[in-house]
Image (cartoon, rainbow, N blue to C red; front, side, top):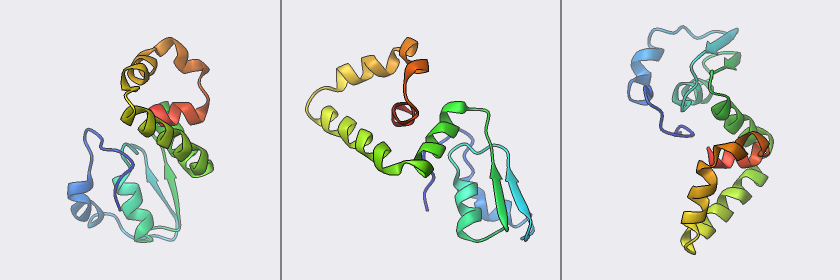
Length: 116
């Protein structure tokens, strides 16, 4: 399973080495630096623990994960619209809007997750 996004400092290439030092548990596994999520996906897919707590200081990243979990259909609709508009030559308008940081605080969580 692939991570949501590529992340600087990603651990996907060394997951086997990392998890060789983490005992399986029926308790919770805490992953404090979620990033792209390769370690989280590995842990869940392999039932490494009874429960999981994922966190990160990047609010945009956490919003993207929460939106994907809570409303994937609406998120994918927006992403497909972006893909279609990009293919039709509207990419310049998209990039201008994406770079307009003044609008970011007023975006919905769906729009913010899609931009991320």
